[in-house]
Length: 38
Image (cartoon, rainbow, N blue to C red):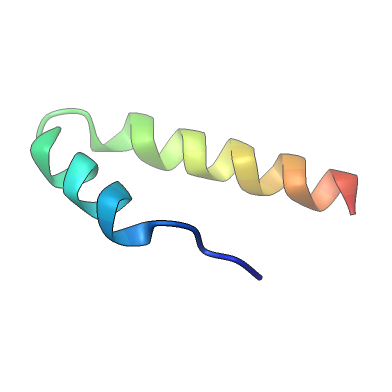
């Protein structure tokens, strides 16, 4: 499993202080999409 650039994602999430759920929702959607493909 490749995690990609998790540090950059963490920094982007930290800078976006008020909208953390948008990041988590996008992460969840990506995970579901990946699971459906495989």
